Image (cartoon, rainbow, N blue to C red):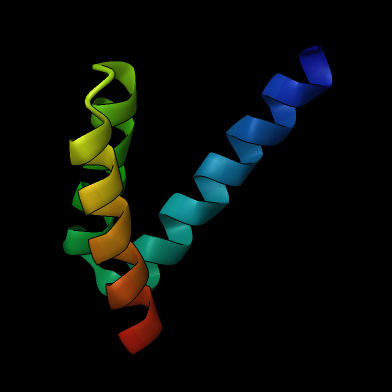
Length: 60
């Protein structure tokens, strides 16, 4: 269980750094919105932000 938390933390950090490097502040804000949507159990918010994030990453 401990290793799962460590690896998920490293994954989140690397994804955030990648988004910040490629997309700037917009990528970080979209990752934040995805996290908030998941925590608030608002699936529509999380899915919408994930789709926009994916489209922007495909363009970058």
